[in-house]
Length: 470
Image 1 (cartoon, rainbow, N blue to C red):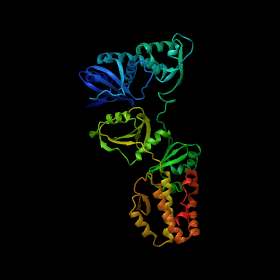
Image 2: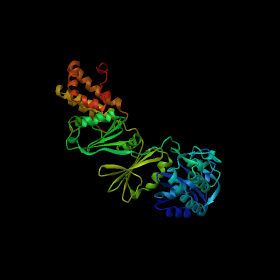
Image 3: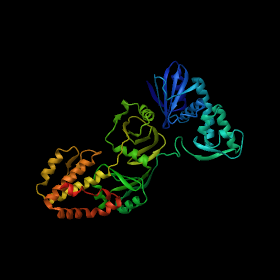
Image 4: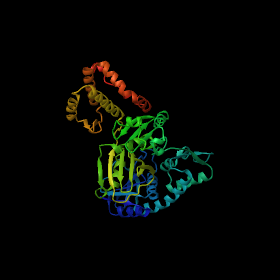
């Protein structure tokens, strides 16, 4: 297998010329978040494949090949691979194979024409609408430029020039926008609402209340934790630490607070930074061809997060079903959306595939476990020994710095966690009696009631059925 980086349009041309001569296999290009694969055989391109390609109504396969390759030529920063492989069912086979020289020559002409037209229609997925009758209008009316190209019986150059002429003469105009396979285009969105504001300068209770009432989606971040929201409701806290409730009750005035609004899909991918299930973890750039990783996640239509760490900044690449949703650049603890990835060695790579990252219930349960344990320590002299014995044999819990903690992120362990809470309550009922224990629980919970209400986590403030625990 051959692989490497592409930086200029000339790089693309050189690779096409060199890989198509006396070779048989698949040439992949990955640029601008998408990929195209060419099946080549002794100087000819015989078939191609790309993500989201229509499975039907493709009359003009060669026109689509030129369109997708012109995108690579226009946005050449990326990667390529060439491997000896056989043609498979995912490829569109051309009616007539095209030589490398002809492909390059046509691409240069088409790219110029397409660039000129895109300036007028903004995106190839803009739907055009006839403004007045004209001959053959059914081939253009209420179709996107992409659909017009793929269904046209003419060459792509003639099609582009015809659409441009119809726009200039007022026969066609933009009607609406959509993305292929979608009703609307959705990309990564991230914007700071609060940035580096000390806790003492704001009313955190009011901030939390506003996040809830405004159906906020995004995250609240301090130096110690990140609290993730979807539609005004906290869904995750990382790192896992029930002390967050104490922080909101008595905030450290010197702590800096950030609030970042982010779309829900991107946020669920960004949260994967905290996953313990890394497929690749901290691998040095000398040992990995990162372009192959990008191509692999695109071709497999996987969802997940690729993080590239450099000495100056980090890059988080968010993938949704094989499509690059966007890139977040992180520098000095702050993030921003960037359109391009410019890497210099050395860098280190993490790859995490999608998994649900919600954990708010386990945070609240851990708080309740420590609350009950604290009550028992005050009233039951020998409780510590029995609880420590249980924790020592547990795969879920550990005892650290005076608190019960999780050994790891307890995925799908709610039953075991609630069982431990039930055990502690059972000790309390047997030694203190129901009334005294309930009074102690109410007294211990009282200072946090407003915080729980504002954070909208009251549904988790519940205890196992006391009758079942006795």
